[in-house]
Image (cartoon, one colour):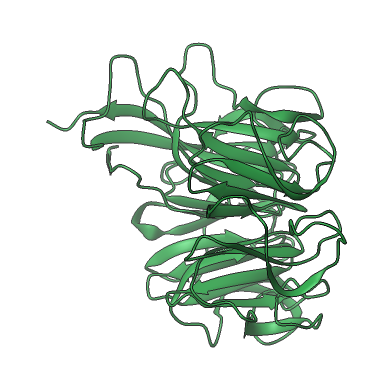
Length: 412
């Protein structure tokens, strides 16, 4: 199976790593176009089958292929705490993993292989996964939600039992990006406004109160925003003028504003020493990618998830010196990922991970419970490393998914 690849073509989701494995003797055309064949792989926590390997076991410490219908080919994926979502061929939404709260949108219990989501909207544009709920974005800017709703995290205006099939979130139009935290969610609209809903005990909704919001509300004071990211209990946004803003819980310094480490009910500017291009929110830590392709980390560092070689929290943005040039960043509960160009393959990108590794979420094959420095994701000796063109991780997950290109052709 072949697909057309264009330079920079990558869709951001709650947990995706789009990779390119170029076979010996092959190279991309000068204009960045070519044809490729690819598959989706995963690693990390798998007690509920959330990696999608067709088996249920505690973990996969190195990448394994996601099995299922019709092929393991997903243009976009998202990972929650125990479940995963993927947009497959013909824009068909599929899900796998834990289903205790109906977050798969399918009948029955947990699944270790993908199955189409019942009643999913057509014309899908994006997906996001929270702890035990799911979100889907259509090409017309409408949002659908399903799964647990005990904190109002579905945005349906009610708090109650599980919703087991996709339901339209009322009052939201023109949405271009979604991000899901533990029990709250963010939606960015085409005109730069940000809406939020769900649990709000620490101000993660950003409306100036600690009151739960079961329906979307405007985040206070935010305009001209181009990207958002939801952590477990904090939220981040990047403005059109390259500034980083943060709100919500700050007990570990994850807002990056320095002491005193007070929660913020409305957005505050983060003192990043350079202009910010993109951002990722992990469980209780944050990563900021600057326009000059360097990464600053701050917040909880109990497992080395800041990539600084130690396990000391940082309350303000701190440069990760070992990464050098980076093209994108992502963050799970207590681990991080980055796209970096390997020195031996010009113009391509590969996956590096760091932080906690108790469920194999680093994908390096290492047995240490944590690694505070970035390492390359495992690849077999007779295979090229995972090379990628896009990456984002979900704040509730301890597993990751990657789309690995297995063959490459040059267009004549």
